[in-house]
Image 1: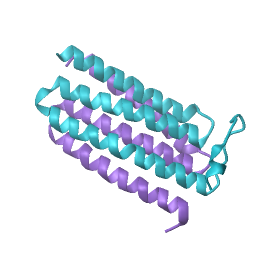
Image 2: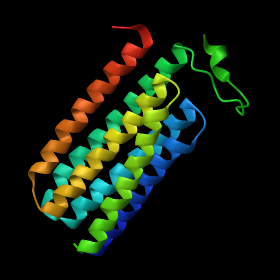
Image 3: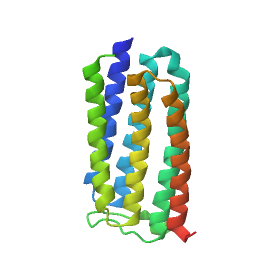
Image 4: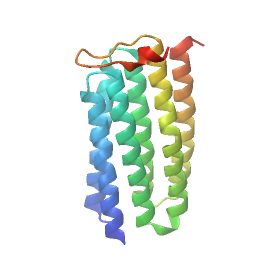
Length: 104
Length: 86
């Protein structure tokens, strides 16, 4: 049971590191939001659930923290993306299509 | 839990901190810095839970829960400030 927890925690930690690396590497605000929210939510969820599996009497509180991250992280990233679109941060040069003009 | 595996996990998360911190220092616009702070806070929550496992203290889970709540409120306030001022 502890081995399963260690493997799940390892997957989560790897995804957290890759999400942070994407925030450094990608060319644009919107791409950085993509990496910094999806990857990090997945990684934090798996890390916390893995800790709950390793230590079974902590499981319900870990599930509470993971559910809270799963609810609040998309909301904050959506707020940042909407604000940066409204104050006029441009897309990067390689981007092909921008559908947001159609919905004004 | 094996100690070496635990130290490797903490080192990998710490490497992630360095990447986001560099982006927070040299991000061209304010939105880049906000995204970097968002990523750092989510990483800190997972880091605190892992640290609580390593030190065998139950209190760290409460700390990470309150920290995630405060970080969420702060980021929503920051986004609102970027959008239309205070």
